[in-house]
Image (cartoon, rainbow, N blue to C red; front, side):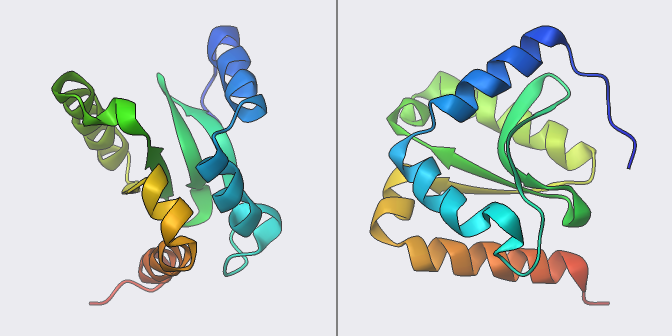
Length: 125
């Protein structure tokens, strides 16, 4: 899959985000890294266009976003909606979970991600 050109600013920002992941991101990453979930190769804090996706599996075009308290504000919600529409326009499916979802129901979140990945790999007619 050809890669889009990523600006040095985006690359630097993504690296910083990888070093400063939230507790919820770290817990979820333990389940997604190293092809642990259904053999999918997830990447974390990945620049795509002008955005940085929390977790992405390019093979099935699945993006997983974790939202903290800052995503509760109306302006942030509108930004997330625009961002999700942009990802969808490029063929990605976006799953959103709160940090609290991950911290209180990690198994359920991982199961939802696995189901979405399975649907993407084998879409129903």
